[in-house]
Every structure is written in structure tokens, then in C-alpha cells.
Image (cartoon, rainbow, N blue to C red; front, side, top):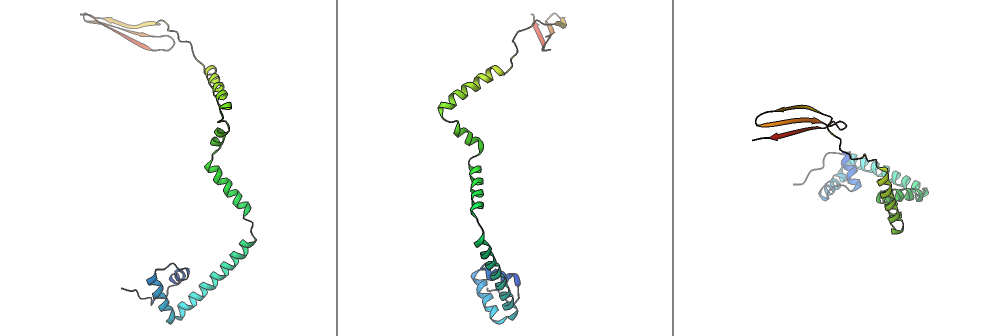
Amino acid sequence: MKKAYHDCNEELMGRYLDGEVSQEEHDGISKHLKDCLSCQKILRDNQSISTVAINTLEKETSHADFSVLETRVLDRIRQKENPWWKRLVKRFSSLRILIPATALAALVLFFAIPRSPTTISDPSAIVEAFSGEVSSVMIIETPKSRQTIIWYKETS
């Protein structure tokens, strides 16, 4: 079923002028335009505004220097494709530089990381101890690390 285009619609005339309507709508609007003076005026006004805008845009862009803009856009794209850390890795990726740099980094890390001596201290005190007929339990606390050791012995 075809739509009737008896309503004058400025937005629809704009879409018609821009070629943004279906073939069915285009045919209906064309038929409507033959008889509607109001829509013909809307279409003429839209065409004149469009012509002025296109001519002004063409005139302004003909004088513009887009080489600077193009360079900036391409630089930005390259930065996104190739972040700084990838460029750095690429520079240091030759084995002539990479192996000594890795060895140096390993030595620095080995000597730079503080390590405490690993000595085991005697327990500071027996905090609590009790015995029974079946088992005995001792609770011990270490001095520096303040760790609690529970010693449990079963007797039968």
C-alpha cells in the first residue's frame, strides 16, 4: 500500500533533497511536488541554502593547507600503533645491547634487594604448659618474629 504525501513536511523535503528516502517515498514526494506550491518553495529554499553552503565550503577548503593537519593526524596514529615502550624495546632489542643490559639488571637486583639473615632463635619463654594423663601441650612464643608455636604430645 502506497503512502499518500499530501502533508507538507519540511524535514521530509530535506531528506528528499539529500537523497535519504526510499524509492517509494521518492516517487510519492515527486508526485506531490508537482501540485504543491508550498513544498516547491521549501525545496527551492533548501536547495539555495545547500548551494551556498557547498560553494562556501569549497572556497574555504581550496585555500586551506591540510599538510600540517595531515602530518599531525598521521603522527598521532603512529603513536597509537607504536607506543613508547615498544619503540624502546625495538631500540634495545639487538643482542649486542640486550644481553649486557639484562646481566646488569640481574646484578643490580641481586645486590639491591635487602635480605635479612636467616637465623633461628631460641624460644623466648614458655608461655603456658599443662599436662594430663593422655597428652601434654606447650605454647611457645619466639622473641623477634613473635610467632606462637604449639607443641602437642600424645601419650598412651
